[in-house]
Image (cartoon, rainbow, N blue to C red; front, side, top):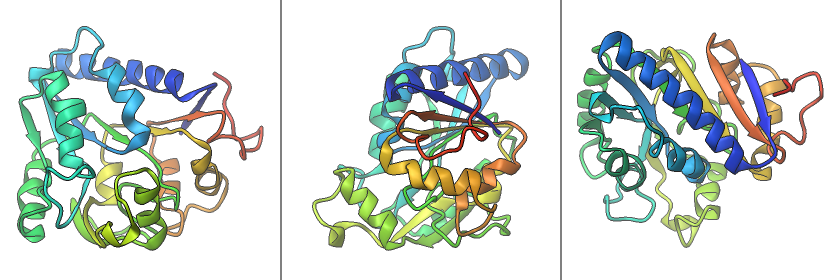
Length: 250
């Protein structure tokens, strides 16, 4: 894992977007298409804003897969990740081939259809983050590190649900769904490259646990340390608790 730290999340997002754009351009040039996994949430705002404006990416040749979604909320809901991806990535970039996880439909059917599409070819790059409880996608601790299924139906823990409320997506924790569809840990690790974007002080404890603790299902994103081509983007706040030995100068 390569760790890069920046003074603020705007710079972080811009640098991560530049790396992502390079990977997309290269995949399209070499294979005629690129396949991506896209995350959502407040941590992705600056990254997607820059990425969708960078030149030289033929988005008509990019196929997008959805990382995770709540079960039981419509796309019109402010917290809907389908809505997030449409507004902040799909429509802005002009992506025409995408696979969204429909939280209004039968989860087993959604998992089957999107999972089968995902398995047809390798993924060039996955965009992910780390939750306040160390989750990777919606794989809360203790995460399943073993299953080879592309997507899982998961139960969200209270820390995760409170994070979603704290980010302003819901008015109270009672409104936050208790179930979600999530890409599995092992499926994420199958991506040829992973770009992990983690700004803000509220993520500092999770970052320390995942980078300096044991690789464990109790710190799900710690598994990223086993991937040969992961780049972790931090700002001063999210990296504040890390030891000097962990940090890689930029």
